[in-house]
Length: 375
Ligand SMILES: [Zn+2]
Image 1: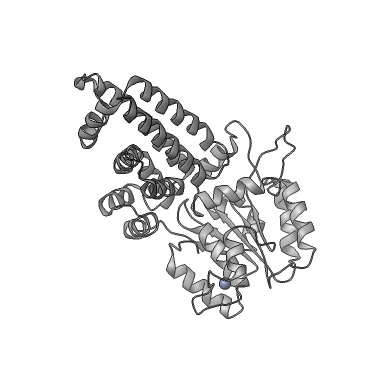
Image 2 (image 1 turned 135 degrees about the vertical axis):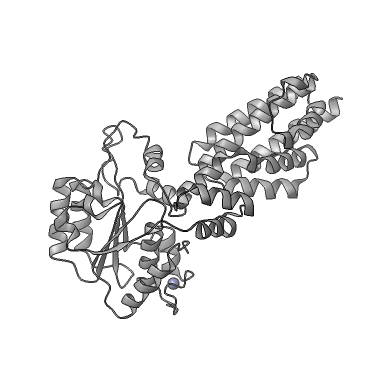
């Protein structure tokens, strides 16, 4: 189940769904990180849930699970994309794997900048194109596969090109039966007025610091003080709060120490636990973590040569780095360093993170274990 940041809006929507009054076209507008997409997902779940509760979707039935994994055949996600000449990709459907990985990675609280980053589309025009709408029309003409409702979610609907908007308008004018459209946009003014006027608009206000902090604590297991600090700085935007936390390398201090210790002592069950924890971080955070680990290793090498004044690590890490540096030979250092660098390359590819960190840990443990025997 997605985290619902706006329970009041959820309550109102649930009532309209239960009374069968949900508009066939909805526009969720407001800043990034205010829960529009998570709410859209929840509606898609609620409409097709087979074990509907008094709070809407159950979250556990097959339909709810498929919807949450973005593999429900009756739920269509349209995101702005770019035309890739080389890969012949041009519509959201062509980008299905990327869209799936991206939305799941950000727990349905993504930012547009992150999407552009994922697509590697910095200098390209991203848009919802007329091809997207044509494909959608075709899909709409078929009967629904499994659900009672077809749900179409258009993220950043303001990115519809004029031609696309006109084609979409026709779709709205003659709405297919049992189909719910959910458009999201930063503000209604950015959406074509003819489309806007056919939508039921809902404003998603910035979130309270309390909501964000609680989300970070409950959902991401962030410690209380850090969570409140990030919530305060995030200005009502969950995505921004997470970005702030991931930037802060202090959160990696403990895991870095525990991991290196577990590898050194070849404690397999601990290695497994820590590997799983790292694998759960977003790809961006995993990269930051590995960069930080390389930094700590470099400093441990400096500590090995007892040039303490050259150390550049947080005070909280100093004692650990000095101790670890004593156990480190230049050869061991080089082997660890190369192994970590190799792992960094794999993070950029779409591979199973759990396996990546488990393999990495075992390699590190082997290198460290070998170094003990040489001594
Ligand atoms: Zn369900």
